[in-house]
Image 1 (cartoon, one colour):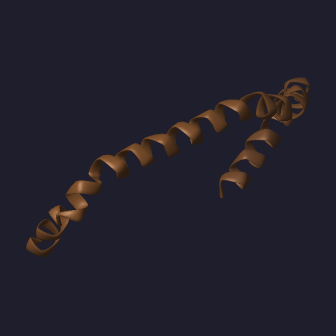
Image 2: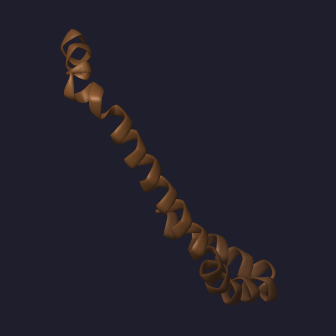
Length: 73
């Protein structure tokens, strides 16, 4: 659905202002390539924080801290 919406918006832009639509069509892959390192850094930080959370919560999980809450609800 998002792809269809993007296509319809681009077609509308192409009708209203075709030079800007062509610029967007050419610039989009370049913007994607420039943002790729930032995405990789974001994924890496997300993985590091998930690992830290798992390590810090491991003693509580081993002692069964979450089981009592799950059975009460």
